[in-house]
Image (cartoon, rainbow, N blue to C red; front, side):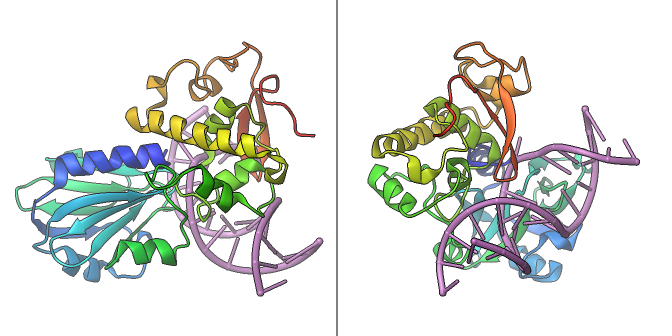
Length: 265
DNA sequence: TTCCATGTTCCGCA
DNA sequence: TTGCGGAACATGGA
């Protein structure tokens, strides 16, 4: 689930449940989820410390600590957060759990272990070191900046949209939605897009992701004119009513409307 | 049983 | 040297 809209939902969830609560202890269920620090190092970082603020960049979620630095979370292909009271409410695949002084718990969930939990002193440095482009919804990110970052790039537009070093936050699901709303075929080579199409793509990206964030990433709450509710549903294009098609672009399963999104060339 | 999955990284090739 | 495509990774559901 976790692309930009979902992680934005996790950020709100984290901020509404877990701020300003001192951590009594931390448990790590599977240390393969940790990057660059051991379970005991994480435990020391978090002991008697609270989360004071949250921040998201692309698919990464940062939690600023009252001690030093920030807790960093990435959710891989499956994952999320759950705040709970009783131990029998502990979710399956909880890999890291913060146990708060007042008796509540916050679980970081990652079924396939493709996510990561780490620590950084400096989110800006972390973003740079991980070669992340600007967040797709960053206020300061605009059409000219997007166009410039696309300059000289090649390959299917969908693959470039999912390239985190170009723009951070878009994954396989929302890339399909953006391209559908923009009426661009996902396999279109990015070097074949006109300036106007690139500008339109940027606008679609912002509009679609903002709507996704509003809905907290929940597909069934999206407007019916969106592609996402139809790909697992009736399989029909909400624009023309024709059958949606599934293909592979850049090795990833891709849904599109063959009538509305014209084949390149 | 086999295939597929909303992500990232690493390796080979152009 | 740089950038792109595909495989690998780990787990579980259809």
